[in-house]
Image (cartoon, rainbow, N blue to C red; front, top):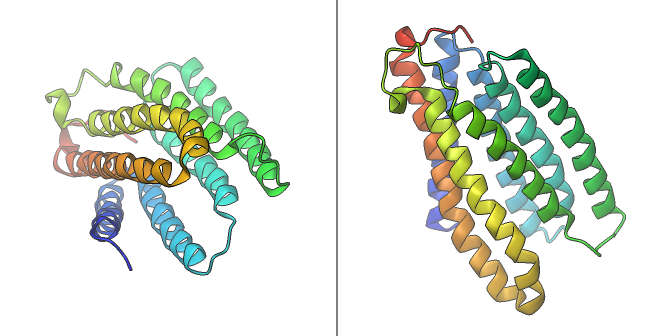
Length: 223
């Protein structure tokens, strides 16, 4: 049975698809990447519910593949706003390298190598990289836009990334340790922290989409 959190979560994902689609239709082409992110997340969550219901254990493998996809979408979304080509190239290179790492981690999960929590390690690496990239983006938002910073779409998306992955980095660092001590308590603590972080992330991304829609005439750069 689905909890109230999942109804809220799925509503946010569907709303994200709607608002990202509207931003794309208005000419902000890079918001197609956010639409794909929301749609892929929704499909992943539905698949996860089905697999859990059917008691099929391949979630660790799927988490690694999803992280690879999520990282690429977030990077390609923001890298087109960078004015320095050297930074853009580094971000593009990190997508390729992270893809290799994610596939290797997924392969280790499939091989049954349980000596290390590859999922937590992979998500932590993703969060660390995105935190740096979006922190850089936050401090380099286009100052030619005649709007307060809180009305710039990239501001809200960057804030969402920083809050979410900053929290995840701490949780994922402690989770493997807590799992060995008390698996039940660790799972409960993990869920109680991750749920609000997910809500904050997607609310911020939706806020960025709405700001893009309402303030598009003030945004200087073509995306």
